[in-house]
Image (cartoon, rainbow, N blue to C red; front, side, top):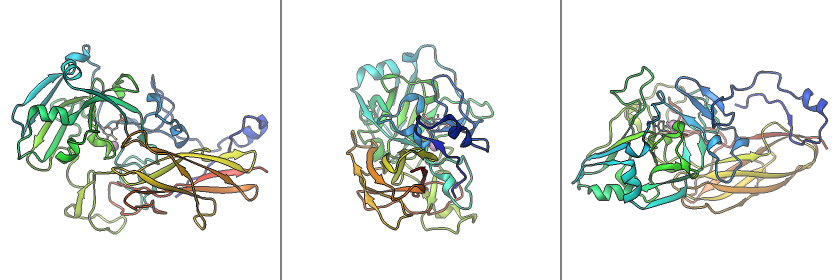
Length: 393
Ligand SMILES: Nc1nc2c(c(=O)[nH]1)N[C@H]1C(S)=C(S)[C@@H](COP(=O)(O)O)O[C@H]1N2
Ligand SMILES: [Mo]
């Protein structure tokens, strides 16, 4: 499961020769070259998919440049007049709305929250055998600050009919083949998640207008649930009287087995249910995987999160899970924000160690040691992920 690593000095005090010696022998991941974005790891070019390496996830609030990018189609054009952008709310509502972004911003209360965005496929590379799709490690996730209006306020203004049970979301991105008359992806959620006051129609990311890569001029943010619900370049919310059936809602797309299936088997899509909340996960953000340490004391840092739940505990281990030590876990900035954990770890000797972290959520669910509930498209893998260090002293 663990692919090879080259040990890179974490301390600037190490002589250049040591650094040169430990330079990666094999070529590393392809790095993103894009204005306004850090050198994220490119998992795919067409469509563009790039993840954030764990060590770049260390900030309390994910900076825009470090937020992962996941497209299913092509980028749409950047609109000339952001405020003239129109969003339609129709279907099972008393008064269908077509509202400009300018009016949306002016008429509804603006809220700013720190909210998790996480791809449904995050962790997919940990499945054995390999599941279909982008091979995310843990970097299809980030927790920046979003500003927008509550989707609930807009749905209340339109007036939900009693038949309203689900949403269907549409964005302006052309398909990979360049079509603009059919949706690239159109997912939806149960109406109670749409009415959660943390589900936003967002127009700012970390205090600035959304960049094109993250859905300019306006997108949904459905925190804690599969990122595919957080429609970028939002044009329409269709309120439905049944589970939505747009592209991305059927078969094995964003669906996981109701009962475990044999890993690698074809499976039957009748045994699958829509993936909603993401599972509990912890990521060590410092030290970086493959760090050479000059001493034996590690000031460990990371983030943990758990879909709809708060994280209750994080434990760390340096002996492959034989013994565990509790980490300090901070409360989230608000509901649906990740939580910082820290621990001081003393290695008993110099040499090679794997540092593990495992989180447990408020519902009592703990990260497993290997990806469980294998499914053909690889959703929901959240195993403990080692960080490998080499201590010199
Ligand atoms: N219109 C549209 N919205 C979309 C997508 C897309 O391809 N088209 N990708 C979704 C997926 S699968 C994820 S994980 C998130 C990623 O958001 P980001 O690129 O801002 O990180 O956007 C979602 N919203
Ligand atoms: Mo995603």
